[in-house]
Length: 418
Image (tube, rainbow, N blue to C red; front, side, top):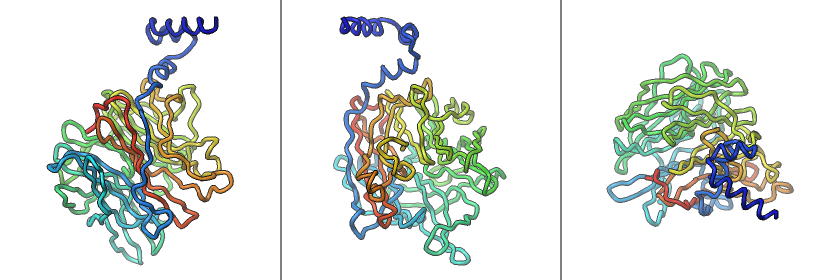
């Protein structure tokens, strides 16, 4: 009898049109989305260690971010990364490449334009938070980060004004170090797209987002920005309407993606939430709303990044969050999770959540030996595979950690892949 009722109910849902059927059963359209997407697009996730840094004298590599494209020598990947030896204390930006189908990475080499530059009073200007992206119109990799200042062997607490810094790669050679100019008083103290994903538009322009503030202690706002790019120079053309947030430092590290004819924006914040917004043009955004599950429960985050992974049949978010398994891990920075986005209701489908990179260790009795995730980057590699790169760190163990890559294999071909 119980089995018959279950069979009849499934048949009813199958035969009846989506939202009408769910409303008849007292459920909402978001639950319909979950039911349709949960048997999902991900076939498997495999953890790969690219460089071992936990127990060796080799550098601990941080901020690893890759882009994939087709060169005259075939499909290849280029990754930027930099060593870390303290809190927000980074060495020069490096790069390495790998070629399909074996994806064997070269040894990291310094990006000439993205080293440190001496200033007055033992201060050095460095570059961090770099994201390389392929620009199809110019056949160029644009590596965009921002400047940062160091006082001796540490991060300078009194940071002067900061802005985006970039360089370009073409045919194996790097260009000069450049500043993305924005002469707007709203960004007098800082404007940046650090760690942010961006979108190459069909016109050849680039859509990104600025996090900006006029004064040091002012909460930052975020706005969409359209830039022209000719393969060498990046220039601001248009800035959209800003989103505001008064908690802490405001809205940070905005990441953009284009999916299903629209643009989607995810935002780091400092009120135990992350935020999401949508736009038709990348300049005018819907009111931001906190990331929640499909039952309305908000995700609890601790001022950490979220980034996008797009499949032609579904949009995913990669993130860290609070969970019963990680309560003693600072900022809940492990494990790294992934879930599918209900783009109609702007929330995450709980049934679709998967671990991308697992928590390793005992977070109850030995949390200092649990490596943090959180400065990661997703990238589509082929119709059958995507990657998430991450540089783990153990701050209480000399800032050691492994350079990691999660191989996500799709159950269905991804038409958005390069």
